Length: 354
Ligand SMILES: *Cc1c(COP(=O)(O)O)cnc(C)c1O
Image 1 (cartoon, rainbow, N blue to C red):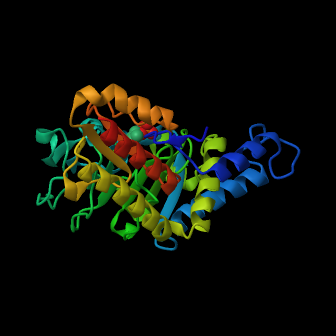
Image 2 (cartoon, rainbow, N blue to C red; image 1 turned 180 degrees about the horizontal axis):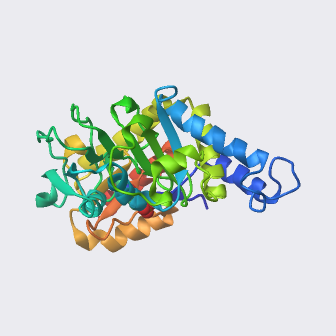
């Protein structure tokens, strides 16, 4: 039976990517060797890393603008501390929009003063705070572009002279805007870029070297830049599969083309959530995420019936995060529009049967 995978992360990738990725396990580039057994310094793999780094910058329209792309270990969670380690000299400003922002904020406190410029914790993070002040003397401002757990997304970013750092783990490569307003962008691969195991960091080169503390090599961006993201053995396979997915995205027409599809999918689902009296959306309407749609049943007694219906339709991964409850439909780039039609049909079906 065809599966419709709404998992929040690790998550769906295009079928073509899975096929090519599996071929490389048996025979990489017709070398007679598996990609899992070759040296990360071999010519074929160095070419993979180079292409992946260049393609990431190309898709973000950040080529030749003083940025470097790195593929690091440790997930986005390691970036929570690495950002502060490398950039926080005295004071940093954080916008708190959910679980991941809170964790980033907590790590930064280990390195200096942290100002929480605003928080939406008062309403269980169901909205994005607006009209906050960023202290002009902050070393940087940190925000989370898309809140994977709560299903909210920043539609615009503050205009400020302070350096901007953004956790884009769950919406990178999903929508077009001016990425050059950021000095550092990071994203764990497993939400919208590839499999778990690598983290993309896009960094403006001139922001480094401004803190006084000693930084251990593995946590030092400059070391990874100087070593072309091969200071130690990189996540060979995760980077390769990410490259396949970035190639796929380019072939679709890049970010602006996929954004149109993403908008269609999100409109389809949110329209049904709003139309169908059995469902209520969790996030404030103006802040709704096209990547992660969070919603609840209006009548909890229908839970079993609804769960049976979507499972029978081949839908997977629809349960909400434990801190929100209800349901979460993650509609990353690779999720086809057809899968959203299937979910909407199930929701209509429930209404008829209830
Ligand atoms: C999943 C997620 C993280 C954590 O990523 P790891 O790679 O598991 O450390 C951080 N930020 C956001 C927005 C996420 O969605």
